[in-house]
Image (cartoon, rainbow, N blue to C red; front, top):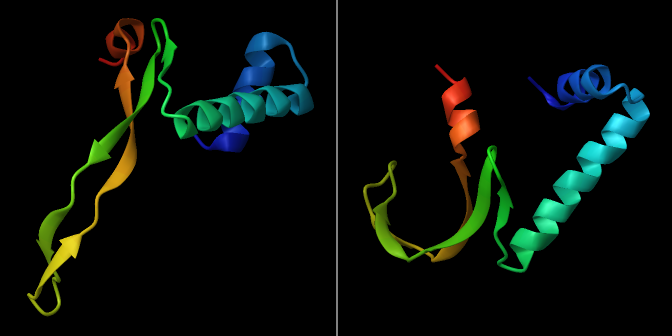
Length: 90
């Protein structure tokens, strides 16, 4: 399912127009981005939680040359599915 299909499904499920469903989805994504940007956790009970984790720097290899290279430390977004979401996937 892509973004357009998700907006269509949200509109049908909620009775909203596609324009309003798009606004709602865009607002949700924006709020999640802002919260994660502040290193805050976003938890949706039953659905799951988004959080920021720190990855340490590490040594890797260039696959073309085989030369060692340092992969820098960075922050990554993690998602952990909630029990209702996990139970819906069989």
